[in-house]
Image 1 (cartoon, rainbow, N blue to C red):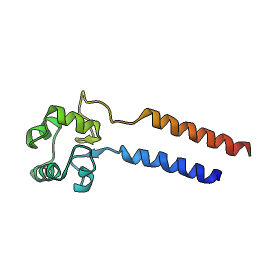
Image 2: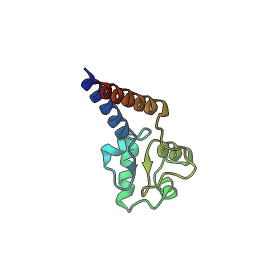
Image 3: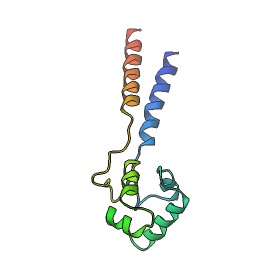
Image 4: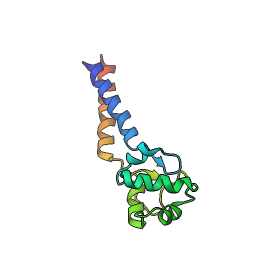
Length: 119
């Protein structure tokens, strides 16, 4: 039973890190771009079409070349994990990583470790 609990907690922690992975607009395929909250199939197509003309230099270049991505939308996309050349948008909120869930997971890890150590 304890092994199942430890495995479940480890799986939860691993899946949380995948859910908040960064997606580089210059390297991502259509599926990865679609996975970013706020980007749908039409926006993905627009990004890929513009990227064929050349990589995006920075956030300003992305905003200028892709219709529908302005300052506010770019900030939301950056907060959702989209990056341009490995950089988040300046002034945009950091990627949303729920601290309460992370701390709960780490507490569960500590509890599971303590319980297994007690045996």
